[in-house]
Image 1 (spheres, rainbow, N blue to C red):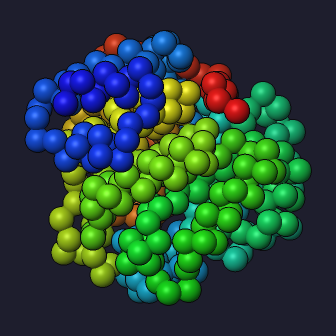
Image 2 (cartoon, rainbow, N blue to C red):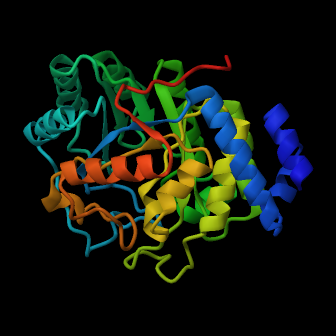
Image 3 (tube, one colour):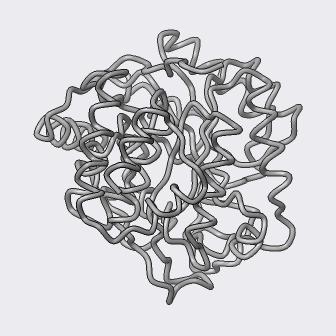
Length: 348
């Protein structure tokens, strides 16, 4: 197994069988070596820098009915809200004062947020904060919508593919959603010049090692600038409420594999990782992550954006989140970086 890690370290790729052996190995030494190699690679390309992204959760309305998600349209217990453009701009203002230079507008697929509303909002954020990047994470939209938002000033778009296996994708999503459309959206975003983020859940119901291999191969084809993965955590009001979640070891192993496979990627240590383990985000940094996303949303809506059970940091003010994460990053031996934190392109 150590030889496989070294091969991946040197070549950034393995055969299908070798990837599967690495994913399925029960050898704890694999994780130790993988962590060391992953940390070495991230420091080679990004140093000890950990980039901050200010997360603004703009809406808990969603037209989709994904079987794993707490804000699915079929959840009658979900608390719904929408931030106004004025509230979003205020979040950006507060975030800028706190040192954030990237704002991530995330929400469900909410028809309220039309191009007519979003494009002027994105342009205004860029006008007020021209040294900042604007990232959107608002799901599947039309090609024309993506084009208009890009022209308005959006720099990045996060759209996790969730499962590159069409069979698994269909088991996680309602029938009106299609893997082909998700794939098409990602390639459209790339063509329009966005820095693109993809990613998947680890330990999702029905997921196998071969499904994870499929995810790795798809991302090698797509070459996203950002890769976001996190452990599946069930939500009490979804069809998967009784499924087991929280696969910490496998998530960390995949983070290490991703860092060695995509040395130039921006990889976040997610809130979900911090939810399943008190030191989850620090462990993520040790396995090659170089991004964290403190929450800038108003405190009174944070608990309403509940994608999974027991989400952390829902009661903290933005400044508290910023200070808490900065202290955690420093205690883990890394440095907070407040620039836009753009992707460094190693591959064309």
